[in-house]
Image 1 (tube, rainbow, N blue to C red):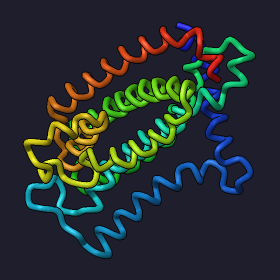
Image 2 (tube, helix red, strand yellow; image 1 turned 30 degrees about the horizontal axis):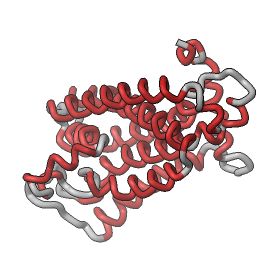
Image 3 (cartoon, helix red, strand yellow; image 1 turned 180 degrees about the vertical axis):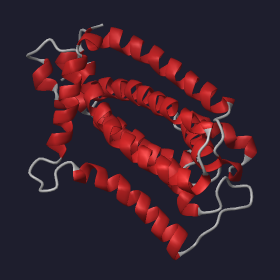
Image 4 (cartoon, rainbow, N blue to C red; image 1 turned 60 degrees about the horizontal axis):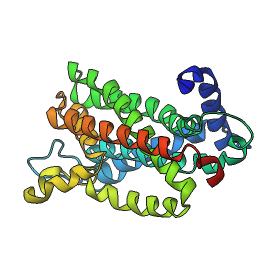
Length: 258
């Protein structure tokens, strides 16, 4: 309830977060959007134009760069949200020790800033893929996938922020987990290339169902199948339950840890 009441303050904090990232630069917020846009351009240029690499016959797209963009952009937004969100409470420790602000406000600020960057880039990519593959009703699933990703990222980032407050080693472990996690999701390869008997391992990565959902919509122009919605729903429910437990048990010690 306190977070809901602080909605106007959260939006101000998100804007200041973005401005702080580019403080002192001549191009300002352009730099924030330039990195993901350059990532898209590099994938297309290197894999599709220069090397003209092709995927297998059963892949949703025969072009490697086109396939990589769809999975890489959501993954980059997810990784940035977790990294910045996990350290947000420690960075705001001096404020939390002096002001009775909801700790989750600082986590949502970091995650929200990443989503503000991801949203317009996803829109531009959708226009590009709509030009390449056509327009269909399946595109209506993209806002839902975006919201689910935002909720999942915020829940997990908040959990990690509590762990980081208690043990600073969490950030180092998170860096390793993200480096490994991209190889345990269908971002860099088609899921059918992974051994079928071990395919369940990929669903231990919370981004796997969402990446498959984005691929289904943007590459095949099909509504995501049940594995996307059930997998994402299970992860959101699990993370929400864990977060509730951790917040309740850390409420008295959190400020002291910071």
